[in-house]
Length: 277
Image (tube, rainbow, N blue to C red):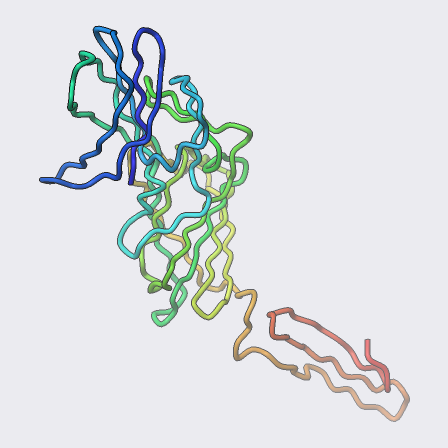
């Protein structure tokens, strides 16, 4: 990955994209260059990853970035491209050739476990939606204060998409804007399985409880999909079943059928005499 590095000299701020980083002795190393300056001192700020920075502005109190609403975690960790960190401002002499920077994570980590799908089920994607909350999308970052704020309303949803389907007991990692779901707040989780079944569970935070996502911390929670009827591919449930058969000596014979099609849609219909309804 890369850094977006900011240098302020004589009251003028410039930014540059670093060379691709490498890890040496457990430390991430990046290289970057700026134009020469006659300033005695310069201040330096940085944002990781550079790909999250969407604007070209250099107002360090309002750098525009994007917290991805579609993320690609692995089976064991979060999507590094969504792990947004800000370097604490550092003041150095203008002739330095190297400096060390300390970074602070400004997003929250959600670690979600899905239960109730069956041991043989695999997962292709998981979407988490927090009604009325901004948890991804366009944001403004204040690099001096290491704070992040949603702009233009943000988005109330974020998804984990796997390049290869993972086991159903795999922890699902999502990087979110810090937020808290209080009692009576609602969220939903939608799981798409390896065989294209779609399960959605809607949850209301109970009285006296909350689900909090704080910057730099991991919030762990479980969502139970037991009893949820899947949408989409209905698999072995495709077909038609006769529920009622009524026969009389009059013309009012009728039948009632339940039908499930390939897309999982359920239809209930009646045949009255020779007519279908």
